[in-house]
Length: 87
View 1 (tube, helix red, strand yellow):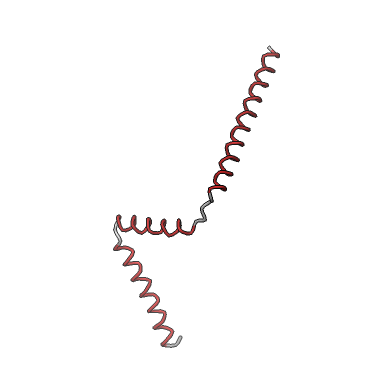
View 2 (view 1 turned 90 degrees about the vertical axis):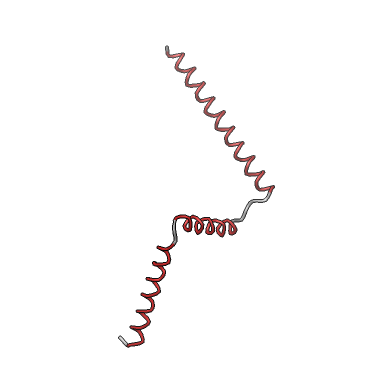
């Protein structure tokens, strides 16, 4: 290894050690602050639905909830009726 490469490697290791020291200096509330800051950054990246899309998704969800509620109600009634016939 050349002398220049060794010094570059040493500098990289030094930077990593410094970062770890800086991370250790961050206290409990500092970590919470960093977390909330990163959450805010990620929320800015989100593509939120429009009012029309939101309405459409809400209606689809309600339709499926009602459909499956009626399906399971009907299934339950049929099974109960068959059970009563067997007795």
